[in-house]
Image 1 (cartoon, protein in one colour):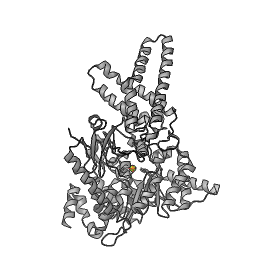
Image 2 (image 1 turned 180 degrees about the vertical axis):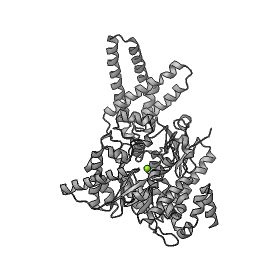
Image 3 (image 1 turned 30 degrees about the vertical axis):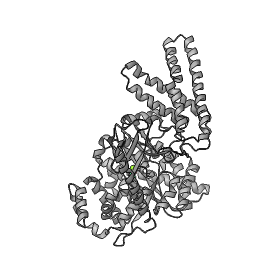
Image 4 (image 1 turned 180 degrees about the horizontal axis):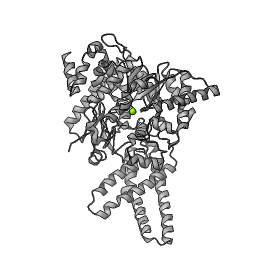
Length: 587
Ligand code: PEP
Ligand code: MG
């Protein structure tokens, strides 16, 4: 039976494929296909891992029996029994043989199947055995990590490998952390669905940057969907269709083809200068997460990087932060790829929905119990880690010798922070000078993400060369709703008059003072806001590379001067969205 599940649209387009259910805690398990010639050795790898766990459990059992812990010994017997049960051992093997999944993926796929069966059991005792099963699977996954994986050293984990006849796959999970999304970039999946998350959570942002259809905040999705179900993700409407009828499937295949044609058409605008009908030039920049995204910036026809979210360099490293040299190499890679076009590097924005693995138990406890979005995040965290901050500033400054680099500071709210940032920058420059390392003057910018910063803009601009409006956080902090929480996502409203006033005021004050101003939050890449932002006087927008062409198309059709006369009506309206739509219709 076909079921529709409603969530939040994240990334445009349609994805059609088979469901792969993954427990959130196992999203980071490697997912890749093994070649037909490798199936046998992969099955052996699984068997070796299982044997290792069996030996481990048998030894443990002997130890506890000696100490006469009868209950523990009985539990280990249950684990040993599960380990050899056909439903785990044999069925996992079949995922490798029939689907060519790598052993870890096969294990977690079978675990999901069995976990469902346990959940549906009437008997409490049996239902509770699910935890035992998970412990056994966990042991096997750990053992697999130890049993030599021939692909591990080649670094090809997660890379789709040719496997003729394989259907496209869609990942379904309760949650995916932003750090895990980075792995997704090189994975076998063509789309994903999560139960939790908001439209501008960082998980959603990374999905958008990869231009893969996705739905977040689909609440019950991972419970409703079964392993292998056919799924359609309608990324425009935020709808997931489970087991669509043949007619619906055909309709979506048609829409998929249409959007490919539309993409190809928009792509032709790549080299067209972004200028309005009345001759106003509008700078379209790109947002990136990793150095390897630099190619997409050039391909999209963006004229620079408006936001390099450098914190993604700090993720998936088991807490070992990149040192000055490693960061310098990463920044230089982007700067060189951009060949003289500006690269705006934001200093790390760690915290909130992007915690670091190395955070202490104390910090993590606070992350979970207090309010991480209001905690030690972004520049607050950097200033609390002066050594790390110094390394990052020196690395960025060194990259400036290879092109045009700008530094952007996230979540500025206090002048005291500004002074400390300036001091840290002066110190970093002095250290490089003392070492005889070349660098050039870099512009320093502030992200306007906290209402306090927008309200004191003239004071801030005494110390900054430019500002970039981070609308994702500005909305979160103005409306007091967590951007990553689907329970309040209906209150996340970029059209809220208070938000629009803060944005309009920031743009006009920066323009009046002759300072650069850009919008780099998700509003910049949403065509619904292009006219309004131009009407506010904005001439620089930074977005995901995949969004550049459609925003450019919008810019090319605008008369900026005429638009500016609409602004007061929209800003004074109770429902700015309706007012804006009405004015656009009159044009
Ligand atoms: C923003 O807040 O709008 C922004 C661009 O930064 P991030 O989404 O990374 O918080
Ligand atoms: Mg932000």
